[in-house]
Amino acid sequence: GRGGAAVLDAALLDDAEAALQHFKQHAWEPAAAARRERLKEKLADAYATAKELGELVAAKRGSVATLKEELASLSSGEEGERTRARLEHDTSLYKGCVQQLRELKPEIESLQGQLHASQQAMQREFELWRASARAKALKPRLAAPCHDRTNHHLHGRATGMGLGATARTVD
Image (cartoon, rainbow, N blue to C red):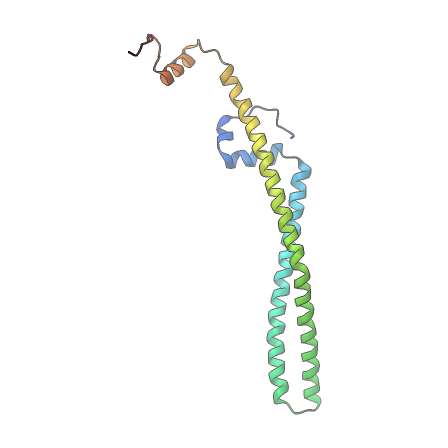
């Protein structure tokens, strides 16, 4: 990745959300991030289109039902013909919108699948990056000599062998 060489603060790396944000902004490949954003935009557009079509389908379904009732109450004549023409028009629009929704469904499912795969790939890359960054962040601490008072004190607290302590044997 880009920016993976710098040693990061261990506290940042311990906070998963902060580490993920840092990864997305500084270490994730820009091309992968751009592809993911394009997928999100396409999916949002497809959702918006589906919503509009769904609303139009609902409106035309209601209109068709109303026009059928009107047509049943009208005698044949000019008004009946106008109502029949509107009914045919709205029925055609309804069927066209339903067909568009049917065609849009696999596109949305495909985009959702691609976005899910993108999320999983990003998560894998993030985990690898985070593990590597944690190892780099720990390396300076692990390489520090144990003879200084701070590290010796920490070692003593962890082992019970602080400064001036003598080894005890257990019978």
